[in-house]
Image 1: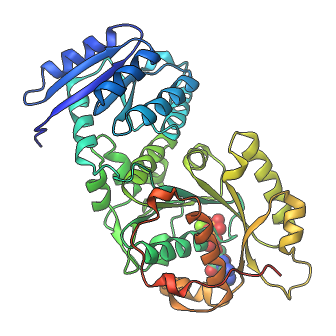
Image 2 (image 1 turned 180 degrees about the vertical axis):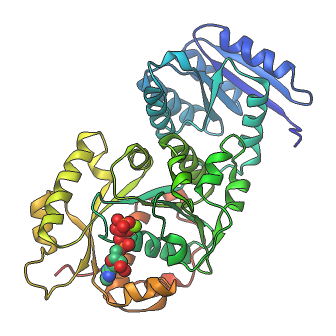
Image 3 (image 1 turned 30 degrees about the vertical axis):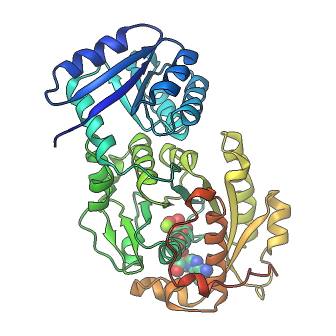
Length: 408
Ligand SMILES: Nc1ncnc2c1ncn2[C@@H]1O[C@H](COP(=O)(O)OP(=O)(O)OP(=O)(O)O)[C@@H](O)[C@H]1O
Ligand SMILES: [Mg+2]
């Protein structure tokens, strides 16, 4: 594609290597016009950004994440239209884990993309194409990422992720993406009666080219208005997707959708931690069985221990059945975990049946406790929404909203 415009690029690094590498790469790109300016300190960068309002800021990243956070925050204030890119040398990191850990943290700090140094002309061109073909969110705010997780199998992560995503999609048609990151055992496609042509693996294989248009092409559309990026169809393919690839996919997805909902595999590995780390809301699902509640308490403690902000964790009690003896109720769950229960989703015999037919329960039935629980999760997730994004189109479901569920 042609890049028929002039780019204003602010380069931030304390030596001139970045400037000469970007300059050399641009010189070999016919048709790309760019005006570059260099700042060697953060202060200088802020002053330059304020006066020049660059399209792109490329800064040289070392292993200090605090510096990254300060820079992205300052740029968001002084040049809100600028896309912030981190350039780094691999040898700045002791090992590949340190590199991918920092990349995930940088994505969380709103770095949009990365360039490896020495910078190649081809990578720089691909980066500019990705950035400027991708429709930039006009509200300036990123979409919200919500990940459903439990390290216990069968508690209802997929059920809640699929149903919540469908309800959000009814409220915001074509603005919600469900990513099936339950990589080794994806069930979202059959739960939605979809047979996708592409999967997360295709997105991971196209990371260098991936933009909003390509991402959308890799999804399957459900009649509710939900887009699905399905899990890989084989175990071999699942093992090819690492934390860094998933984090890059989620970071791009939140730039082009209002909501990104993520289903996960019941294992707290690097892929899941990366997704949780990027999430605005991590919905932690528990069932009412006391041993599950106890292990959920340990999970919550662990997540806080690894640095996930408590305020981003939302505990949900699924398959609640008030008349079953020996089950923990919401007050019990709160007492045992130290977290409020944000939503209670009732046990409903129609749920397993609806999964066999590929008809999400939330769309099929009305006025049921199950649906009220899902609406409560969706409302909770939406409450995180920055005010500027509240103007998204709303579907008829708004008028069907249930009153808040009364916790028994
Ligand atoms: N609220 C509910 N009422 C009745 N059945 C439910 C409910 N939620 C989930 N189930 C059933 O429980 C089973 C497990 O649900 P689901 O597959 O969503 O769990 P999961 O946590 O995603 O499992 P895995 O860990 O294997 O990914 C399914 O048969 C599902 O139909
Ligand atoms: Mg599942």
